[in-house]
Amino acid sequence: MSEVPTLALNDGSEIPQLGFGTYQIAPEHAKAATLAALEAGYRHIDTAEMYGNEKEVGEAIAESGLARSDVYVTSKLNNGFHARADALSAFDRTLEALGFEYLDLFLIHWPLPAVGDYVETWKAMEEMHRTGRVSTIGVSNFHQVHLQRLFDETETVPAVNQIEVHPYLTQDDLRAFNTAHGIATEAWSPLAQGNVLADPVITAIAERVGRTTAQVTLRWHLQRGDIVFPKSVTRARVDENFALFDFALTPADVVAITALNRDERTGPNPDEFNYIP
Ligand code: NAD
Image (cartoon, rainbow, N blue to C red; front, side):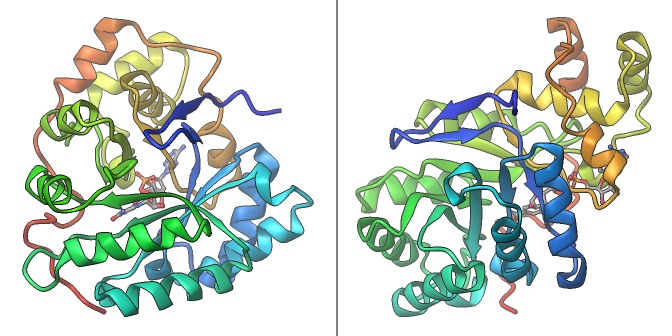
C-alpha cells in the first residue's frame, strides 16, 4: 500500500523515510490521530515519553489491525532519566506504555550538556540494544561536539540524529557531519510548526508544481535525504502530508529553498537546553 521509500541505517536496519509526528497531541486525541495516520498509510510513528502519549499510540497500533512488525515506532528517553539505572527502567516503562515486546528506535531526547553525562546515558542505550528489545538506538538534538564524545568514548555510532531542520534552519554543517559518520538525519519540525508555509519562494514553487507549500517543503526534505514525520490532527492535512511521491522538485527548487536559511530555531538550542521536567 505504502509508496514510502525506506532508508538503510548503519546497523543494517531500514526506516521509512516519511512518518507521523505526535508532539503536542494530547493523550485524549493521540489514539484517534494515530489511527487516522495509519489509515492514511503512514507506517512510521514518532513519539516520546515527554509527549505523554506513548500509551495511546500503542493502543492505536494494537487496534489498527496491522501487525506490530508493519509499523516502525520511535520513542525517546526523557531528560530526567540520564543516569544508567534510570535510563534502563525508563526504557522498560516506555515498552510497557506502548504495550510492545520490542521498540524499533529509541533516542536520547536531548544531550543536556550542562547537567548530565550523556556518555553514561549512551552506554545504557548500548546495554538496552544488546538485550534485543530495541532494534536501533540513536540520539536527538546532538551537536558535533556531543557526537564526537560518543565516537571517542563508546563503541556504537548512533544510527540516527533527530534535529530541528526546515527551510529557515537548514543545518547543512550538522547534516554533513551526520552523513560523514554514517548517521541518518531526522528532521524535526519539518514545517517549522507552520512558520514556513507562507514563504513567497515556497509559495511560488508550490503554484508552479500545483501542490501545497506543506507538500513542497516536505518534498524538499525528502530530496535532501532526510527522514521526516510532520504532525497534524486534521485528517485532510494528514493525507496531504502523505501525498509526496507523485511529484518532484527540480534541483534548482531544492537550492532555492535551501537558500532561505536564516539559522532560525523554533525550539531551544541544544547547547543551552538543560531542562528536566
Ligand atoms: P511540524 O513542523 O510538523 O508542524 C506541525 C504543525 O504544522 C501542525 O500543528 C499544523 O499547525 C501545521 N501543519 C501540519 N501540516 C500542515 C499542512 N499540510 N498544512 C498547513 N499546516 C500544517 O512540527 P512538529 O510537530 O514540532 O514536528 C514534527 C514532529 O517532530 C513532532 O510531532 C515530533 O514527533 C518531532 N519533534 C521532535 C523534537 C525533538 O526534540 N526530538 C522536537 C519537536 C518535534
